[in-house]
Length: 341
Image (cartoon, rainbow, N blue to C red; front, side, top):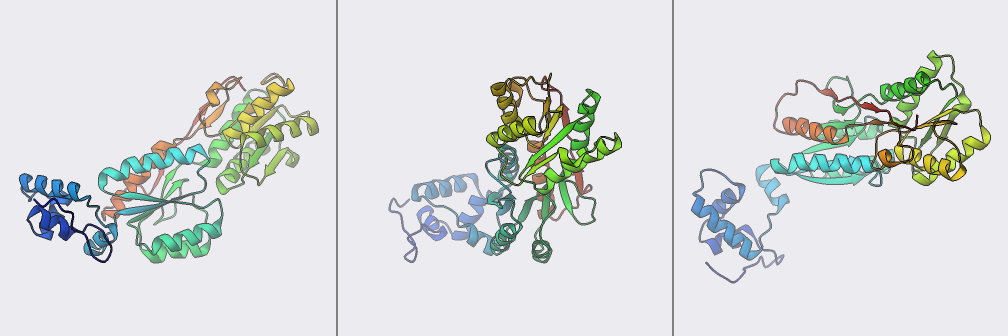
């Protein structure tokens, strides 16, 4: 076996042919051996792998996709990396796709429809094998791009019953309604809804809150505290202080995300506001640290990892040309009652 790495003159990159020469076999044999085809003799596979390792050979995914007419990457678009729930989702997706030979290419939309459309154009030009997109709401242009591409697509975090649309998630509105019913059952009557970012899923939780308060005859528009700024612990503390100053009659607050609620609990400690004695506080998503707050935070636990795994499995089936029995998979949610309510 040659010990001198031969490289492509054009790029300086070790090629499949370089590995073939070093191993003393044909390029097609190298390709089959590195793909793990069973018909290749194990001793030959070992020889090819040793040559590839010695030369530092890295397969060219673009060349492989061109040769096989099939890409090895999946595009995943999420709204924000600073939100832990999307990190959980991404990790689950990657754990499910990598064993099947797929890599994930991530794009961050920053909750901006125009940015999502731009990312879709860029990613679809790379001919991905599949798409995983957060949510169901997007521009008409983005919908047209997806439809015209013919690339299998699964939507995350929401569930849709529209024929031909594949999704894995849960009902954001029903989850918001259940948390509101819990607060009503605890005797709370002036329940504020506090939200930041104001993406479509947050607004669906708002609709669930409105639905329950209207049914109880307790809805008041002034109990809605909506801020388009990014969700954060600091913002939650600020909004809690504002509510206590301007609407002291509020006896419960439903925060649309746990980071806001965590900030509120810290502000309550700082201000000496008793929780839940003076005001109950609840969050959403059951993020890291919510069970360690003082008092521990009541919240809705959302199945981010389960959604990631299930969506990846659904996409794998679609990429393999298999039928999917249930295009809209509802994985539900869990109300986690702790000391803050």
